[in-house]
Length: 193
Image (tube, rainbow, N blue to C red):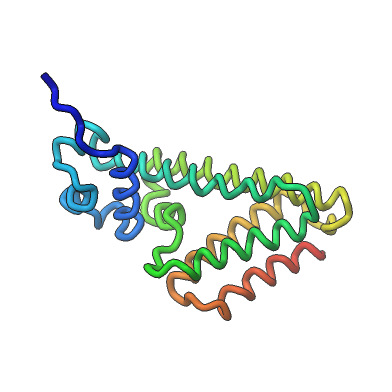
């Protein structure tokens, strides 16, 4: 008769995500995962599969949580103000991370994006969804005259995704508002032509 699992799967996955986020895939050992998740190896393998499958599950959990913040881009109101609030909230989340981990997606893009097809697929879908939400907001702002039309909305959306990832990378090395605020301000200035 199989033994019942004596741990919360979502909590264990959250703990694994934090370990991968802090150390990266390669530097996180199975023992690190067993220790931080508070489960034994057998339970890890039975519940999550191998290390790579666990990593993919953790990355997926992070992307879903992160994408939920994109709902802020879908609210009614002045599009420039919505985008401004969104970018500054993003910047402050970076500044308020005491461990200076950066973005799990950005870290994974750098570490595994070019040779791990499953990671690359999740990452492309993640960035694609953010670009889609930004494109819709920017296009709405262009249609109602709040944002100048000199660039295509999709081009600006891709630019803003790049700026956001740059904020996360710079925030790991120079986590000061005096460094990150100008990145937001210059990006927002691009909406004026």
